[in-house]
Length: 482
Image (tube, rainbow, N blue to C red; front, side, top):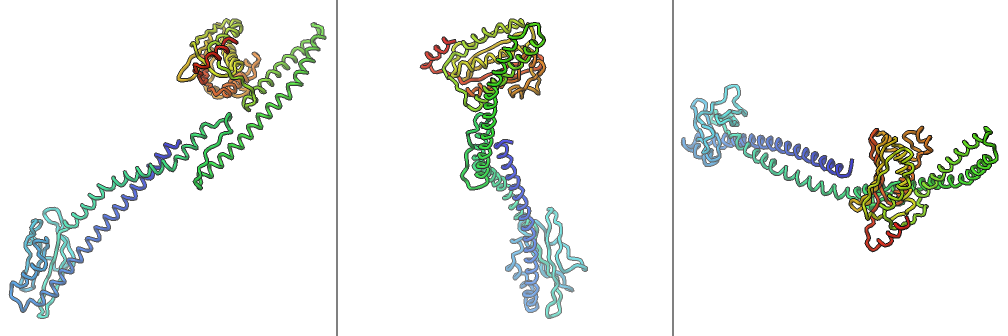
């Protein structure tokens, strides 16, 4: 998972958690407000019933018949406030009934009296409009022993209006808040992960050839700084280990050269002193061949080790890659003719590079030799040179046996051979492509291979293109030296 996908995933998680938290908060506020408004409404209705019963009905015997109606209308204005108020006196009947509210939501005349079993308390009545009317009923007894039934009610529509307003507010502002939170969270995530981007980019560029480079240390005082410091220490340990391995390979190869040379000379002397018919001559000759093969392996290992360690001296000059390819291919035609292989070159004029002529010639020769070895008789090997997007492209392709898909990733490894028996018979040790890889790395070039088993292979080398007009004269000198 890269940094960009991590950034998006963390932002998505943050947005999801925030949206979930806002949803829980909205539901909690809605339910809490609904319960609070219902409780407040019930308290208001109870207070109105108690006020009418204790303060107004106790004064009723000494007042005229219209006094109660006037007091209730002035105190509560039922028609304006959409209130339902009814006062019923046992034995006498209805003594007060509020008028219909101005919005016409309910008709007070149509509201039934409470049942005898459940007179006191709250009850709900469903109205024709689909809304509910909440009514509170209380029974009072005045000092003159008169019993009154007082009812006050109000529609739930008022609560629904408030709750609907709350839902509308949440529906409008919640997405806006989530959007702002996502944008802000992404910005903060991008800013906080920007150092990780730098570390990742630098880490992707560190290979075995440039272990001297280090990751940027973010001076933040947190885990990120400790991580970058720890990674740099690990890279330093890897650099020491690689240098130790390269030094060991170079030293071992160097120390083996002298005894192998001595052994080779002594075997050659023994062959010269033996009669050709003696069986010992054949055994010594076979040992001499193996000694020569070991010498080539040691020399190749020494070359690779020096190139990897940066100790190999490269004589960098500006040269014409096309001319170098043509001259090298002409030298390799003898090997191709032995197998009746057609060796073709297709080069573009004026492809100049900067590098060591001998080493680059070794790359070309090794790639052509490798193509010839693994191409059947009467096959074709083609070498191309062209410039493309500021790079010099060297391609060596054949129509030979090809490379199995599972072996492509290992062809540049030391001592790796796809067909070990065939490589052994042809004198190969699996170091030719390793040398090519080391030389390319020393020149800042990239090498890759595309192959299909049974249809051939194509090796592609990309070198930095040298295009300075002021240095063409030097390049022509390199060309003339070929």
